[in-house]
Length: 139
Image (cartoon, rainbow, N blue to C red):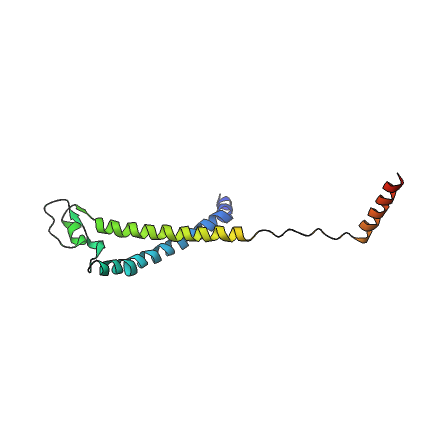
């Protein structure tokens, strides 16, 4: 059973999938940082210094906190600012993946296979062709 598992784990598709998952996780972290550290501060500056990740709507009257973490401890809240941030994160990831797939498809289309030149006949083949043509002419 261990041998079968080793063969399964070493198949190309499993290794490719593992590499893809690891790269995807790293890419996700980069995009999350880009959204949290670059894009959302710019949006916050445009909207007057607002931080969307802390926006929420209290669903119970007992919530009196002004930040999301404390409000969640006090009761039910609708964290729509966090949802907005995660939605923006998803849209950026989807757009970047779209661009990558589009570029990959263009590279595949731009590289058509060059038609192969037929090989030159050997001296023996040329001689046999001459003999064949002479026999056809006599017939």
